[in-house]
Picture 1 (tube, protein in one colour):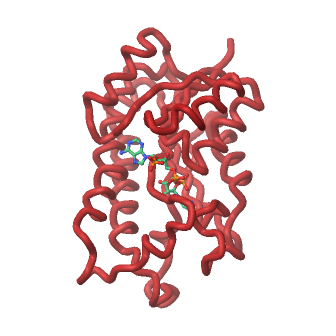
Picture 2 (picture 1 turned 90 degrees about the horizontal axis):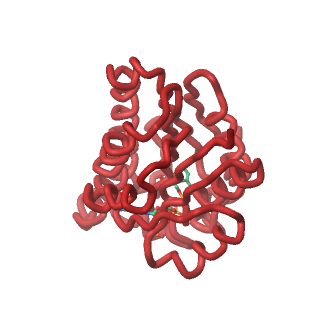
Length: 235
Ligand SMILES: NC(=O)c1ccc[n+]([C@@H]2O[C@H](COP(=O)([O-])OP(=O)(O)OC[C@H]3O[C@@H](n4cnc5c(N)ncnc54)[C@H](OP(=O)(O)O)[C@@H]3O)[C@@H](O)[C@H]2O)c1
């Protein structure tokens, strides 16, 4: 039977690639997008044969529960979480502020995307993932950059801290009795800079991993019989 995957953050650079690669392999794909992406990305996904679920805010439990009104019966083989904030040409703004000057809304947005949203999706989708199915979380290799390799211009510790915290949620999910008893796998893919419009023209564009490589790693992990925990960097 055709496997069914739900992708959060599907309108993003990486989420969109994951949807395309899953559809290329003829899987059933439900792309979770925000309403403001419906006319553009939603239409493209429909042309690709994916279905769209409108979920405006993963950090709002009521919003995530809205999924079940749209798709009440669909049991899932896997749930992909690729929510984040890497808009085109957004790199300079993302690393602009040393912690002493960081606007607090930037930190709270990170908490919503990389903590509240992660736990909401895990808790609320768990009963809709088949036994031996999986979750896959898009993390980041930024937590592996040591202090002596860390470029002084990169004021991104507020983000790295939330990714580290997300990684701990993932570790906790893996030993959760409700996961272990059903053989559900919790995968984690942690790329370095990815060649998306976020990095174009920026300091990491030449060393960035291709979005195709990341999408391919995700699809391979979803099909893997064992838990995948993989960092992907160039060099
Ligand atoms: N790009 C990279 O170089 C890179 C490298 C390593 C790891 N990653 C990680 O990979 C993930 C995806 O990155 P990306 O480059 O694809 O980012 P992206 O293009 O900004 O896509 C992220 C998607 O998540 C959506 N989103 C944000 N907050 C949300 C919320 N509260 N509820 C529902 N949807 C929400 C965004 O919607 P809007 O369009 O409305 O904002 C966007 O569609 C992120 O976690 C990122 O940290 C990225």
